Length: 442
Image (cartoon, rainbow, N blue to C red; front, side):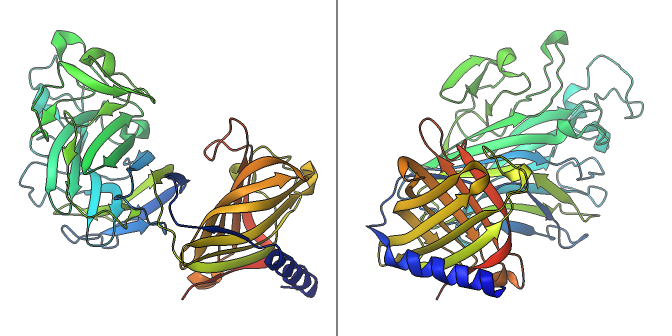
């Protein structure tokens, strides 16, 4: 830091300590966290059932204190180049990888994973799921002389550390394969864990269907379903954002519909009282990688565990246009100073944030909660803007030094009225151009 920034930083911290706000108790309501886009690649290109790699996010959730909902958006599998017929058991010609997401404490876990179709495809990569429609009307396809429909098919599996595999749900995704249309290989999945009960939904970004002779392919059929054995060909469960409805299958099987995985919920007795969200990729039994998956956003709602520690910060950054909203984004600086602490059941601290381009001066009046990991602090509270009103805010402050020389980063979301964390009134995010964020963790 230069001397001027150092003096400002020191002054901000001194002032903040004088007006320290304290909240006692760790009992808080469920909170929503957006972790943003990501990517993960297999670490070993050729080891069967190997090459496992994952991204684990530094927020812990307590499934014993309330439900945990995990949503992954834009999970793109188009870069996984499957070869062989992907039958079961696999042969040395069957190569690829599978990906998934969930929550874990490194011993206990709950996850959903997505694989290319096993045991039923019996076609080359361009012909996944072809065996299901061996009597389909003939049409041009890259699958040779056999009458195969050319769909790339995916299998969705729930999995827990206690119960293991809890069934399979299959969907045919890509009309002709070959990865030329990645939207057919991109999907959204979400699951909810509540009182040992697990429910899940999937939504394809694009899919393909036939109407001829009732051979509808785009949402497939249950294969070894988790429970009930009710045919999805009769009715599907749809989540419309507010409720779950049972509707005719042909109504459900449209692009953009959330369709319940399997036939209903299942149960797990895994201990999910201190788990972190994660996304992973792993080689198939045979592999010719490396393989990569990407995603647009991971969103988790649950009761966070408030980790003890302290963080201080002060400085400036220029809000990034792609990660900021509600502000005049003209290259102006945003400045901030904060102290945040979680200790023996008390959340405490103080925050001031300024963005002069829009005459915004936010000062905290109370902190609701603070959680401190080894690299970052997240805290939420209430404050005023320019001395009036009542605004909620949440800050993520990242200490780049804790990752071996990375860049410090500051994010704030501010909302009031009908706005909320996911759709804030103001949002500002960026790497620090001056100043410092320091996480103090024992």
